[in-house]
Every structure is written in structure tokens, then in C-alpha cells.
Length: 78
Image 1 (cartoon, helix red, strand yellow):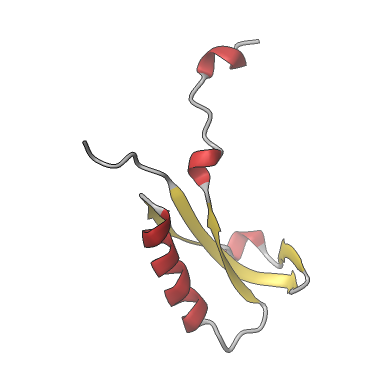
Image 2: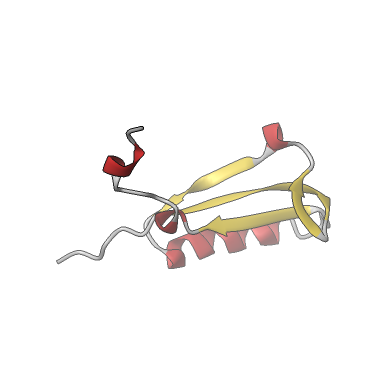
């Protein structure tokens, strides 16, 4: 049986302030991609982090999207 897909998203961009996760310009946030597991997402994250190492305000993040997805549609019909 194949592994369950665990959706991970990698996004990044320039932060207003490195002490706070607030992007300077949301319209410029880069969507790196969607990945089926943490290992793949981490590879993409690492490549981006290394590519932007000279930019102190650039930060990339792995979002554990599988934890945010809510498959139970029944609860949302109001």
C-alpha cells in the first residue's frame, strides 16, 4: 500500500522584520511548491534557503498543509 500523501507547501519571501513572521509584500511571496511528504518539502526548502543566504530578510517556510485540511464537509453547512 502506498504511503499516505501528506501535503506540505513551501513558501517564502522577504520579511518586514526578521524577529516576526510578517511578509513585507504578500504579492511577492513565492510559492515554491507542493510536496507529498516532509522530506521532499525539506529538500526544496533547503535549496531556497541556501540560494537566498545573502538576503537577511528572506525566509522560507514549510507548511504542514495536511494538518490544515479538513475533510469533513458535513460540519460546514450552516
